[in-house]
Image (cartoon, rainbow, N blue to C red; front, side, top):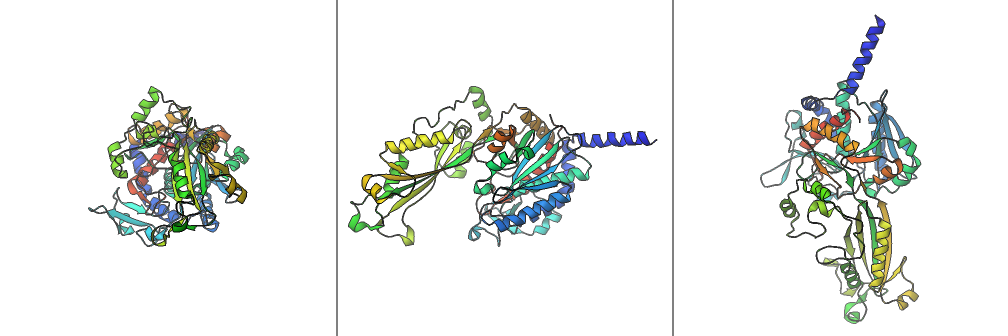
Length: 505
């Protein structure tokens, strides 16, 4: 009798691994796991995680090692010459495929004076009042009450610790039910994403055999503004440009030298203004080359349920830049954005001077068709055509006397864009899981406007990548009072369970 019993156990075990749960089962599993999931979320966001402070990040790394180790996952620090990456892995018996998940655990810096709570790293529960303001309510109410619109306010609650807590909670719920995916899982945890992941591209190449997988799933970013279940098939890359113009060697009295010493702030303003027209389009020849939207692609973009009137109202703008005919079309093109400017002083510290320098920082959001080095070359040619001499360091006295208009140019490339076909096997597979979980197709985004460091994986590992965003779009990520809506947290757990229980293609 031993052999039949053994055979039954093996068949039953396989059935559990291969089981695809339906919508009501996923919801029941989520509800059963809800209290431990809330505890986990509050625990993970309570750790400060500004990557500027490596000692803070070390606490987070140790926590991740302990949490995954307790669940039987292997873990390995991938040394980078700075803050390491953490690779955790769960192999499944007889699995033929492997999915590589990406999360980042670091967060943006905090300005405590602008958070409406005692400490950004001590989570609080809030309810929105009729006047639109958010009021702290006792966290203990969650033991017996649930309101999908209540929110947990804490740094990284949405970006990106919330999604990591969703994944761990989903794994725990399935594990307790005896259900396993039919594919193996690797997770790469990035602890410098908010610093631009400077060491990640080289690390991916160095460790590409350890990271090898059949596809990549990114758990980062918000759902569509409709807050419907969402899949995003790409993300824009990002590069930076730093410009400095020069006036007198030291700030000079504007009464004595105004009208005589050229003002670097004016020079910089004129240079920046020459790069775009009044409708916000870059006028540098060739900047948008290579981007042609077909009728079918435009139809995909038009199918996204954007409410452009509501978007403009939320942003407080009556007009938009004319790079594309809609919001979705606008993010299919590279952007050239002035993210900050500085010259002399303003406000109470203002003084009547001609400043010595003016500085502007620009970021370029990239799409797959836009090579940042080519765009840098176009911009530098344009700068020269405006009569500027380009230097890489502060000008010497000889250069100051020789060239009437000088600009220092520095450049950096964080990472490239990526985009996966919606009709790919990965896209079809994910949609099946999402439909099973929610009973409807997800909103499908061709490429998202934000940037995440995924192209190094796509290029080095030769795999497809798709983003599964779960958090609410109005989460204040990168800003004071970041938050996670409870309804999104719960649906995020269900979303991940639907992916983990969908048989791999």
